[in-house]
Each structure stands twice: as C-alpha cells, then as structure tokens.
Length: 328
Image (cartoon, rainbow, N blue to C red):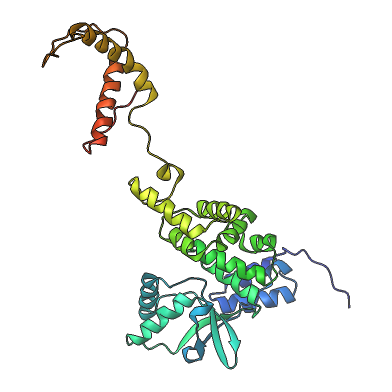
C-alpha cells in the first residue's frame, strides 16, 4: 500500500464542511481526528487531549509545605471560595497521584478556597484537576510559572531557585524554563544567602534586595556581622527622618551653612567688624549699644541667603530650626 504524503497544513473543502457542523469540543476532537486519518486535514490539525479530569474532592490532599509562598493571600482564598460557590469557572488544580490520593502541587490557594466554600455549606463532590510529572524540579517550575498572576516575594523566589539548584539545575536552565533573565536568577540566589533578619527587612520595605546583597558582601569581606550593621543603618535612616535604608538616608545631613554661604557672607561680616572697631574705644568702658551705618555692595541676594542660612544653623543648634534657603 502506498501512502501519499500531504502538506501538514492541508485543509480540504470536505474538511471545512465537516468542521462547520461541529458544535462542541468533543465533536471537534472526534471529527478532526477522523479527517486527519482520512488525509482531509494535515498533521497540524491533529487533535490533542489534555489530561484534565473531574475527580472526587475526597481524594485530594494538600500540604502548605508544597507551596512556593510563605503564606496564602486571604483575599485570594475568599475570591476562589466565592467562585466555587457561584459555580463559576476555576482553573484546574495540578496534582500528582500518590498512595491512592491526589497531592495538590499547583493551585494551593484554589484548594484553600475550595475547602472554605465547602466549610460554608457549599456541596462540591468533584473538581477538575490535571496530572503533572512527579519530578521535583518540574513541579517547582510549574508552581513558579502558575504563580505569575500575583507577584512572589524575593524571599520566596530565592528559596525556590535554591531548591532548583540543589536538584542539579543550572542557572541557565532555570532562566530558560521560567522565561526570565539569568541575572535575575543570580540576584535571587545571592539574596537567598543573606541572613533571615535582613530578608525580613526587605519584606518590610526597609531596604532593597540589591542593597541587602551588597551590604552583606561588604560585611563578609570585613568579617562584620551583617544583621548588626543593617540594624545600625536602619537606626541612622530613622534618625534622619526616613523609614528605608538608602545611601542618602543614612549619610550625614547636609550642612545648613555651606562654603558658598561662607564666601558670600564673610565680606559683609568683615565690613561689620571694621565698623565696630572704629566705633568701640580701645580702652575704657564699652558702651551698651552702638549705631552703625554700613555700605554693602556685591551680590546682596547671595548675602541675604547666606545670612538666612547662618541664622538657621544657629536655630538648629538651639532646637528652633527653619528650612534652609537654597543657595543660588
């Protein structure tokens, strides 16, 4: 028997007519399968079935230790529970068959929502699930990809990437499977190595991931305690009126009276000193007050600014500061 080769994207008029009569996915599946077999459709149209099944809820088991997240979002759980109760579509959970049970590996928040709906009186006997490869690395990759809708914390990503490295995956392989840059993977792996206390500072928004990594590396080179150093940096930031560690927030405050102010005010102050020297007697009693007339030239606006900042520097020292005037 001779089999004639056909184009992979072939679609004949007979196939078009047959497909036009299909009104369900099941019908599309069966008809396209027959049309490919009869060479009315090319192999590009060969149907494939996913491994989704409606199985008993009673067979599901779920462990928080399988989650990529430190904790589940209560609002997300509530949202899924309401969707289950309303009979709306919820994407299938992914499971691995184990010891007569179905262990949920992706969709853990969905599972929590399902349990909440059932606890609130909703009767759900079956739920749609999909089977996945039981390989640990494949499970983690699938979990990370399924969590893209709600951004994961750096702590969660770092922990997940480290687990993949321990499972013998390379940085390049992780980046390829997750569709991210290798530099991102390396950054999260570096962050995973910083002390837990510093990680929590990042979670609290007190320091950025990159600064936490850089400060930890500096402390390691100096043999210093990273946690103590970062706590000191946070204290400095707070002393300067800030809640986050940045180079600007932890540096010494800018002087209220600058060199530019000094250059602008010194000539006027020297003129004042000369006038006082002329009016005050060298010997004898110093008068209680003296009236002076000064003639000042130059940039009087710069002089005004400089003297205002000098006045404010004095007020700062006495606890009665005003905002500094910008020097031109």
